[in-house]
Image 1: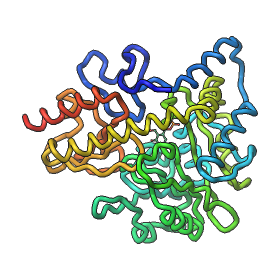
Image 2 (image 1 turned 45 degrees about the vertical axis):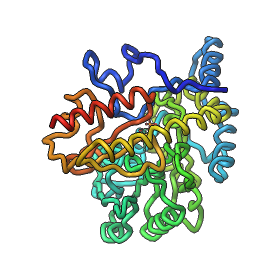
Image 3 (image 1 turned 90 degrees about the horizontal axis):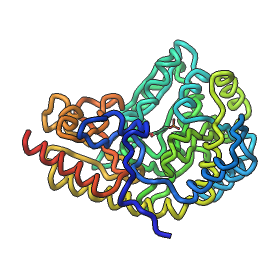
Image 4 (image 1 turned 30 degrees about the vertical axis):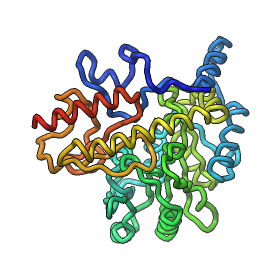
Length: 381
Ligand SMILES: Cc1ncc(COP(=O)(O)O)c(C=O)c1O
C-alpha cells in the first residue's frame, strides 16, 4: 500500500493544539510533537468500526489490546512483560507527575539530564519535590550522559531518575552500554529509573533502541518504562499509554499514588493503540522514510542557509534541536514567530536562551516553506 505523506487536511478549526496557537495568523506551527499526517488507514478503520458499535461505556483494557502490547514489547523490543506488569494510563505526562509524587517526598529530589522534554522538569515542581538537573555532555556533535556530573550531583535525597530514551529534544538513541551504566548508577544510589520510551519506534538511523526494561530485575534498579502509540502513529489526541513496571512493590506504590486522580483510558484510545501495534507497521516504515528525508533536508538546509545556527544529527524522533545563540537575537522563538514560523523555545527544556526545537513531522512543502521563511528572516536580521 502507498500512503500519502505529501498533504495533510486543513487542521485549523479542529481544536488542534498545534494549529490553534497561531489561529488567524500566518505562522506555520513547527512546535509541539504532533505530526501533520493522516493516521494509518488500518487505525482509522478500527476506530470507525468501534464508533459504529455505538456504545461507549466505561472501558477496561481489552484482553486483545493487552496481548497486542505484550507481543509488541517482545517482538519489537525484545522484552518480556506480563499483563499484570502493564499499567494503562491516559498519557505519559500524568504518569511522570504521578511518579514524582509516588517515589519522592518533600525535601527529596528527582534527577534528570537537560535539555529535556519540559514535563520532566515541571513534574517535580507540581509534586512539591526538588529537581536536580545535570546537563547532557556534547562532544564532537554527539550527545551523551555525563556520568561524572551525575555522580557529583546525586545525594541520599535523590530518589528518582527520569531518562528520555530516545532523547527529546537532542534526537539521541543512547547505546546499550549507556543505558546499562545508567541502570547501574540507579541501582547503586537506590533510585527508581523511569525510562520514557515514547519515541522508541521512531529510530531513523541504523542504531538500536535499548529499553530500560532490559536492566530491570533483582540485579537492577526498579524500572518504570513508558510507552504509547502517540508519537509514532500520531495518536496523541487518543490519550492512550501503557507503562511496564515489573517490580510488584514499585507498581503498587505507583498505582496507589494515581488512585482516584487519573481517569481510565477511553474506548477509542485502546482501539487506536491496538490497531497501531497490530497493523500500523507498514505505515510506520513508510513514515520513517519521509522523516529521514525531512531530517536530511533540515540538516543540510541549516548548514547551508542558516548562518550562526547549529544543529545536531537526529538519530530518532522528528524533532531537530537548534542553537541560535550566535545570531544574537533577543528572543529567538519570538523572532521566528514574527517571521511566520512557530518553533518551541528551548528555555522550558532547561536550555539557555537561544535554543529552539523544530518539528519536521509534516509534508515536505510545509517544511520547505518554514525553512525558507527562517532563511529569509535570518538574512534580514
Ligand atoms: C519524551 C516525551 N514524553 C511524553 C510525551 C507526551 O506524552 P503523552 O501525550 O502521552 O502525555 C512527549 C510528547 O511530546 C514526549 O516527547
